[in-house]
Image (cartoon, rainbow, N blue to C red; front, side, top):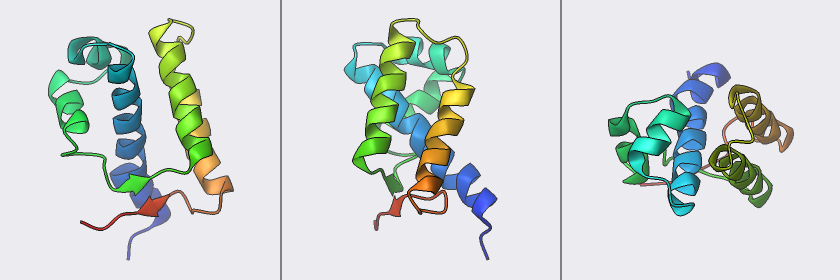
Amino acid sequence: MKLPCEKVVWDVLPAIRAAIAEELANCGLTQQEIARELGMAPSAVSQYLSKKRGYRIVFEEEVKESIRLLARDIKNKDVNDIAPRVCKICTQLRDEGERCGGHETTG
């Protein structure tokens, strides 16, 4: 049995981080810059961008937009602490009735 909090730790948060990393890369940030902004190792960013980690969930458009806005704010240095925004995105998933999991993909 997988508890909802386990799903968050193993699937949801990595998927959110991967999506943010991808958006930041699309904004022109390097993997080193992304790692610094997100407080993670460059190797983790590489795994997110190469879809080796954090790829199990496909987000609805509203969640994607929240992630795009967060990435833009990170790039523009308009956010000091991303944790509340990431929590809001996770809450947004729950509010959409996904039990903090989004839509799982196969493969």
